[in-house]
Length: 356
Image (cartoon, rainbow, N blue to C red):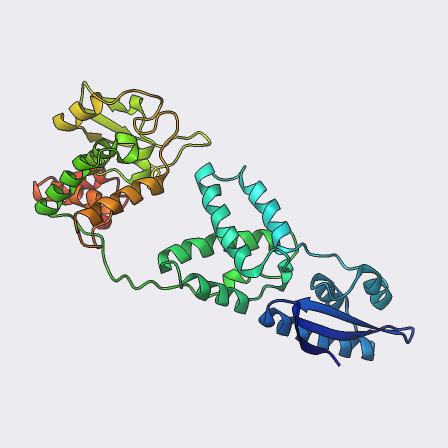
């Protein structure tokens, strides 16, 4: 009978027996550092013992036990007469999937997917059989992630993982996608992004001027552009010199279709005005490369957010003020000036009027 023992050196030891059709049997053992995993494999070992003793072993059984490393290839042949197709481990499949994704998505997306999959591997381990992960496992993983990230971030991460398992199912390594079986995660937002007051803007930009060294000395120019154009973060980072028309005082916000570019959130290009103040500030920036901010390579988006957060804390602004608040402030200012709402929608780059 399969048993689990506490082991002084390895943590937990699983001992079980396998019965073969020629009347012979073999005692085997496996070691685990994690008790939960050991108990899960114990249940499989008990099933293996019972079915091999009774002689009722299916190819699905052999495939499952082999993937959990309970049987060697030779033992599989002795029990079933042929060797089942072995699914890869989670780590093996992840390495191939991530390499494949490099050629299917933008570079920025593949970097984010890499982070998401690393989180998955840190929870389950590289050696976990790909086809051993069930719905309950994914629920436990999501609970674990929610301890350190927000629901919205968790939803994005789970979306990547769902695509990951979709590919595994497509290749026949798993029967169904465990991530797709979870109920959608609802987010109860405790705060809504809001526009900044004139006093808050004044305090913020005073702090920016006192900390011009941030963002390679371009903190003031970056945040002023953000505020006076209402651009989204990615749109601002990929702004090129050829997008600026100083004569007409216009800025083109358009998708960059090459591999390392980006696509506007709505998929449409737009044009916004450039105030005289902004035109003077931007015209004084040195042209060190293709992009207005960053030279030949755009800034990392999280660098911009981190800089804003530092400045917000320095000025004791409330947490409800985020980087996106600069964009909300721009849109609110247009509405207060009596600009036609339809025109505000166009300037903000909103696909639907209700968003504005």
